[in-house]
Image (cartoon, rainbow over all chains, first blue to last red):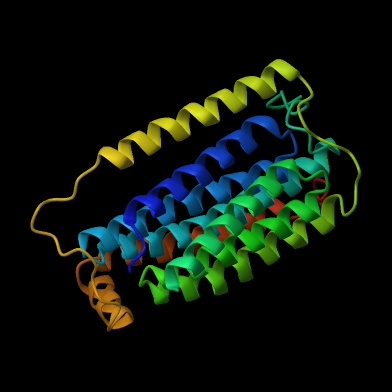
Length: 101
Length: 169
């Protein structure tokens, strides 16, 4: 008995909602980043689920690209976090409310 | 049997995700994301996408998470500061928004019907081979564009994270 496609999609929706709640609730920049990664993974899971349901592999190619983009995004984002921490000595998103001073 | 494994992995992924957003320490949050990624990798294997499952483990749970852990250790290894929003109204609002989003997505997914002539479950056989054929023929241009993008991203990351030297030195 195969796994129902709907359950895969529901799981992806649940993970995405948890990621959104995390980004809204947490104020630590690194944890907000981790929640964004969680949302990307939920989107990947939905793509895999649709690819399996439709019997095409194009969705898996898109997931491959999303993983590469997530790696690039993590590298640039974490470099930004390091640069911000150097100049402000904080990771609290609420205190980072000025573009420059 | 394989269905049971799917549900176990799904529950594990959701629990790890909840731990990620409720955990006080940044380091523990990052490690629970690793658990979530590993559970998702198992799910990819079950959903007949073995290549993506391996990539998920090696690139995501391996390389990207090491990057995160290094940055966390560099910045605030075991800080007890709970950088969480304590405004009750805001927390309630974000819960409401997340719940609404989940309901919307679940509704959209449950009403979605695939076109009538699609096969129900494709075989996992020759998954990697077929994927490579797609990647290097139909998706060759995006593939090259992404390779340039990741090169630019790495150079940008090095430039951004570099220590600023005083002018003239």
